[in-house]
Length: 142
Length: 142
DNA sequence: GATACATCCTCTAGCCGCTAGAGGTTCAAG
DNA sequence: CTTGAACCTCTAGCGGCTAGAGGATGTATC
Image (tube, rainbow over all chains, first blue to last red; front, top):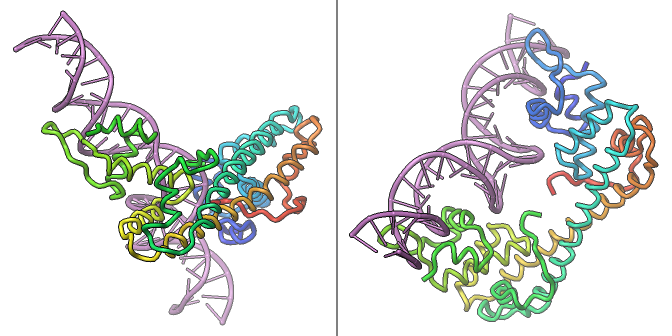
């Protein structure tokens, strides 16, 4: 039986985050001591590790919820889990493409700035005038 | 004189967002009609374009605030603006590196899954067991 | 001048995924 | 039996918006 603190250390998840996952129904309600403190078993440790690892790979909590559901039905075909992972891969690739465009533009800004006064600063000039940009970039909320 | 709706269309910023920028002090309080509706001039249009473009390049609202301040002092040396842009470039590069690791891992997951049942699903297996990962990846909050 | 109706106003609350802090209780070691 | 670290609940906040309720204004047309 693990305390929430031990679980926290074992999985690298903050205590508050574990309670948060319980609150939103991602983690089940654990048993309690007489005094009301949470006690976890190994199944719950595995579940939290799964969640944590999925988060590291960038899955949303909603996607993780789906994956956890799927993993409870070992006899169903696994296309669905596969589809979720593919979706995530696609998102990562899109984000990378956007960042690449940003990087190009930022690099250009920084290179062209040769350390004069603000009035002639290339950085500020580029920010003022989008038409100076070579690439399309639609970051915001990515 | 522009209405908020016109400003919204010209800059591609939602009306609510413009009001939000005013609320947090990023946009100045504009003039008003007798009836209390906002009216904007060209200086404000330029300022919002600057903000919008900076957001597209991934700058935080705080960074933009600094950049706007700097751009009001054309005689100061431009190192500071330069530094902010370099910082942003660095962040973008870090994010890209992280995403690259994620992509590798996700690709592997998806490739190894050959469409059996959930019980044998490689996707779920990898998520269950971090030690199967080849790369380090510490996404979460990136 | 009346009417219609698009656009504007303020205000509140919600999104994601946590994180922090106040103020109080429980547990385990010595 | 005392200490003090770790636990508890609850509320509020982060960034950067976004959505909706419920009402006022502005402009074009008749």
